[in-house]
Every structure is written in C-alpha cells, then in structure tokens.
Length: 473
Ligand code: URA
Image 1 (cartoon, rainbow, N blue to C red):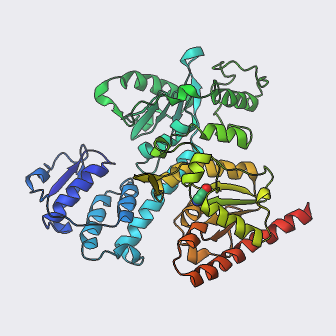
Image 2: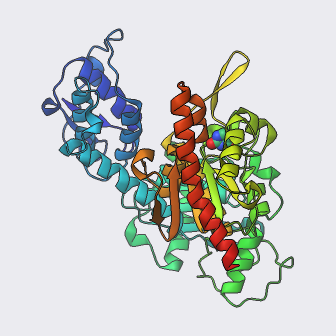
Image 3: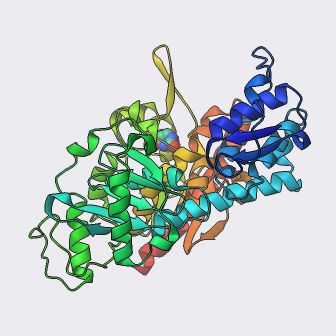
C-alpha cells in the first residue's frame, strides 16, 4: 500500500493510517509512505478502502504517542515507516521502548531528540526585525530549521511576543501571528532571502498572499487576551533595547512605540524583556504557550529572594497552590518545609518554583485530580524556568522529581539514576531528588520513613552549599 499524507507534519493522518493498517495486519514491508506533493507519480492506495474494524483495537504506550509526535517532525523520509514498524512491533512487545539498544528504538529516540534540539535552537536564535512604520509596524524573521518544527515552535513566540504582529519565514512554511491566532502559510524560497532588504521584500510579497484563505491554516482559535497586557509591555523594551544596541538615544519612558529604527538591519535582541522576577511574573500571568491555562485558576509563578543561591523546582502547582497562587503551600509543601528544616535550610532563603506553572487536573465530582504534565507542556513552560534561572542565577538548582529533572536538564531523566549527586548542566549545578508527594504516596510507613530520611540527606547537600555561600558573602 502506498500511503499519502497531507503534509510533512500530518501526525493525525499518519496515526489514522497506522491504526487501520495494523488492524488489517498489513506488515510494515508492505507499506510505503509519502507526503502529498512529493511523490504524485504514485497514486495513493485507498486507505479508506481498508475496513476500519472499529471494534478491534490495540494499545501502544502513551509515551510512544509523545515520541511519535516529535519524531514525525524529523526531516528523514523514513520516519513514517520507522514509526509504523514500531507500532507493529509494540503490539506484541509492549515494553519495546525500554529496549534502548534496539536499533528502531534508538533511532526514534535520536530523532525526537534532534527535533527538540532544533526547537530549542529556533527559540534561542530567531531574531525579529521591525518593518513598517507607526501603527503598521510588523516584525519579521527568517529562519532555516533543520526539521519540520515551525508549527511546534511558533506558540512560544506568540506567547513571548503576544503584543507584536510577527511573521516567521522559512523555506518550508511561514507562520504569522496577528495578536489573535497563528496562521500557517507556504514557505519562502531560500533564494528570495536572506539579505535584509530581500527579507522585507519577500515578506511584503508573501504577506499580501496569505490573506488568500485557501492558503491559510489557522492553528488556534482566536484569543483576545493580548489586548489585556499592559500597553507596550513588550514592544517598548524591545525598541529600547534595539536603540541601545545601535547607539540610539532612547531613555526609558521616552521611546515612541513603533518609532523607526536607526538602522534598519539591527536585529532585535531576544534577551530577557523584563526587569526582574516581578515583571516576569506579570508576563507569565498571561502565558498561553500550552492549553493548561484554560482550566487553571491562575499562573503560579516562583517566589523567593532575588539573590537566592538555591532554587528548588517542583513539578506543577497542586489544587491548593492553584487557588492560593503560591508554590508549595499544600500537603507536599508542608512535607517539603519539614524536610528543609531538618536539612538546616531556611525556606525564606531559597527560591521555590515549578517546572509547569499551571495546575493540570481532571475533575472527579468535587475533586480536581492531579495529572502529570506532558512533555510538550513541560517544554512550553520551560521558557519561564529559563528566565527565572537567568534572573536569579543560583549556585544550585534542586530538581524535585522527574518532571522537574526533565525541565531542568532538558531531557527525560530517571530520578534514581541521577539522585543525590551534583551534576553540571550548562554551567549550573543541579541536584536531582524525589518529589515530596512521592513520599506522601508511599503506603508502607517504614519505607516512608526511610525515603524521607534519604530526601533530607539529599537536601543537606543543598544546605551545605547555602552555608558555604553565606560564609563567602
Ligand atoms: N507539587 C509541586 O510540584 N509544586 C507545588 O507547588 C505543589 C505541589
């Protein structure tokens, strides 16, 4: 069978086809995959002609679905076939993903990692420049991703630069933000860019074209939240920053929003847009980088002294934290407080935050049942942890549990493997330990006491560092 997917990132199309193929016992060697437009010479086989077998079913681990969502963004043509081969094998070998030396498993993990790295690179390196004047200002950027990551990376920019209309042009597709929604349109030929004037020219041509609804794919329902942000909260610091970099005279508070730049080709720095944790907190209150904000009461941001030498990172706010708006104030927080005290650490001297800043739950009657955040949610929220880290610059980050370790170390990290020793991550010392709610869940009192003691011992490592920092000061 020759399966034709709608586009390079058509995960839902692949998933539907893979399910139907597997239920019809189509072996991986009997299936070829292509993307519409690449391979029109071969007619697609009618996947819809295969019976859907709605009552037959099989399960793959949720972690595979997450892995496949990332790996499908890889540029290798063989990704669809590899993923189907894994589906096929997972049916009879449910633990296959743990077999890390298996070549298919190793390859899918490597692909997902490459995709995540590429998304991080785009988030870190992309530079917008202002075009247009006065009320017509628009920000454009050119980027060449290695993989098909633009739709996945774009919500980060919508959240971070919510106030400014922008376009990101790439050879594959372009993403446009109008302050309400992201839309995806065709790419721009590499030969049209990237000199600065060509970029502007290419964008003008392109932008008039995207109002053709046939070429538009809206990614998100319109959201009007950006209107509620304080006026100029993002554009003004950006402009001030750009003016400073070009030697322009632009004292704080006197910049005209959308004033012409002194040098048209000055890239806008993607540095911390705000001054200090209070401004970050205000910005994060309007974060829409993942859907968790919809059901949560509020963003629960980090708290603690600006000069803290230790930063504690938890998973996400729980029910109590969501209502109170402060981290670690519920049962896990009480357990943490007790352990900190026994480890000789004054909580008032550490900065406490979470990897994910909105409460994720499912309602069960009157109760809101905690749900573990997914990798995309952790990744979407990581910008805030990174910016807290850059603002606080602690000597040590303590990751409490697997979600925190994943966010802090930028990859899935089993707690038991890294627990209790100092790691170095990009120049930051990191200590991984368990999450206090793990201790609360242990059913056996003896195990609970033992594990609690180990937790305190781990925290003592942070305590001795704190005391060392105090002495040095
Ligand atoms: N669990 C966490 O990880 N963080 C909190 O703030 C509360 C519970």
